[in-house]
Image (cartoon, rainbow, N blue to C red):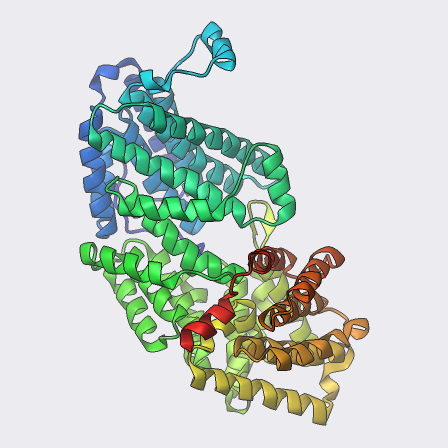
Length: 610
């Protein structure tokens, strides 16, 4: 996951611009923006001072090596001298500004990134193929002659598409309402059109040098493939709208293009590797689709030979080990990533987040809560989620919880909502969910049923824990013990939420049984959840979530029609429940699995284990 953290304070910029990589607003930031614009205006009048394309390629290749060797300052410094005249240096500068903006969501850094992107786009427009009004009309009747493009014009079009894509992301993040989303969407449409132009150039033009062609090809493949993969993951309603305005998504084609580009010698091949790792290890896990761990393993082996201490590849290596159920090696690798560099604290926070879940999967609740506390203290991405997570983990200690820890839980639950935030004008769905859980905690006299296990389930961790049978059985025993306690003791503290709590325990039980590849037992358990539907007061999400899980159990039993019927029922019949958008992404992935006759991720894991 991409975490939002406090701005990095240690990343230095060249002395003549500013002393530290400050993301704060104010005079220094304004002076930098003014200097950028003055430099750019001077550059507009002096094209002759720009760097030639081959030299720009060489600088960018060196900057990429520095970047992935954790020399972030060196990479930025290399871009500095030509950032207002060279296509690739201006784009490189914008990318290096973009990364911390994506990691922090800091408004000052977003503004700084947008200014860098404006400079980059303006430089691209200077070198892109320009048409007179008459020529523009002519291109409507007759296709442009792409063979006549110069190498510089071709690369300007590619850099323009890349800068527009980054600008669209920043515009959406900066906007606090629908306007930002609309502006970003328009930019994405223009960007997509530009990438399609680049694809035509690639097939029609003969490049001056092989290196120029290779770098151009890797950029085109990266852009077109990423669009195809990302669009293919969206729910049907959104896809229909996007296809209406000209977008299309073909996941198989996109992944094939990414793999081909990652093996080619182009400048952007390493970015293709990162995209593949992010897709298979993060996105697939989130949506419940099967990721190709062998592809990830090969990529990481190759890249770690070149960049053995790269925080990027160490992070993904830790993630791969986690996905394979290798919990102790995962913690070791994440700790290596933590100590590999000290410029961007965000990577420490991502590692803390991952280690927290590894410890949760081993039921080391107190150690997991320690990492949640570190996140509360150091990270500002979502203190609401961190606060609730720490409280939930401590509550799993049961009778072993100390009076001081119980007091901490009370304070965390009481204060979690104070940190609620909005990103891109929207509240975070998981924040809204945990705030409801905090209110439930107060209403139930300081009690919740299996709060940390529920978080494991919601973050799709059951599919990971089953790869370690001993750990999976331990969590199963905890769920079953809680189930028996609720059924036999009939606790009075549950009050009006009795049906919600009983349904929740059954839902968690069914999800773990399904992950353990016991579909018939899981179906019986989910059926029991559905019986509580008329009496559930708040946790209405349990019904559509249970239906989706039940559908995949029927699919594993070979009952494809029944699976499809249940998935469509969950999609069309239910709305307005907690974490709805999350389920719709997973629903789309499950529907594709059933339609294409694929193994879902749990069945694939079981087959691999056998």
